[in-house]
View 1 (cartoon, helix red, strand yellow):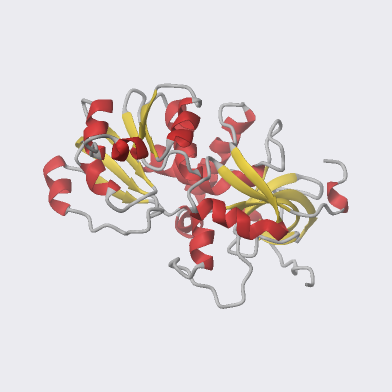
View 2 (tube, rainbow, N blue to C red):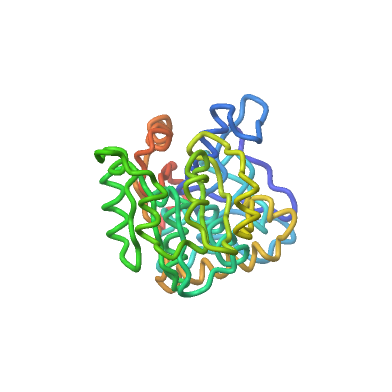
Length: 321
């Protein structure tokens, strides 16, 4: 394939890593709301080295290590991205890991800090806490001084979450189902948070929403992040009414169009925390491009703890990394 063309305001990046996100898998299956015309190159998140900048670009220069987001086409050795969605990788963060930062940490920060206005001492319920965006939310909630109730499925994920440290209570849904008799999720959540939860971070959807709404406090904030469970639930508005619950839809990508300054501030803060060592990327596995189907299988089979990355062939710009 020919190299992507550079236009004013864009940056050419030699890709070191590309990040896999659950929406990428849904898009390939034709189950995502954005359905590009076939054939298409999937992926939206990369890290690498700037090899060329177009006119008008001031935030990065040739040779900079960066992470970036674009609408599709990220699973490639070179990409061209708008300069506004290209960020310098902080010192101390390996460039090969940085592809895992923008979307999940950006989503979690906008959700918790900007939308829910999370405060120290509050209790946050995180569903799907061992996945990429769930783990980002866990780290950011702890950084804010919150108490976390983290829900995941299976002993391996539960152990992984407990190893994260901090004020975290882990609920293993697989263990709840295996109990005799089976324990409803809301029962376990009430035991973990007797006073209720102030914020719900939900990338799962499905029946988990109904279970979570049973344990929210009056005036709680409910953050709808996605539907990794496969089902889009119908929200019981009566429960929102009687508990004065505020429900937020949080789609990080749309901030680029509607609130670019908010997104820019959020990314600046997130990357600052990474540079200070207060946040860290957890990479579950790395796959070469020829094994991309295995990488997607790991995500769809719910095996992943943290993030999955694709590694790209090293070009001449990468020789000094």
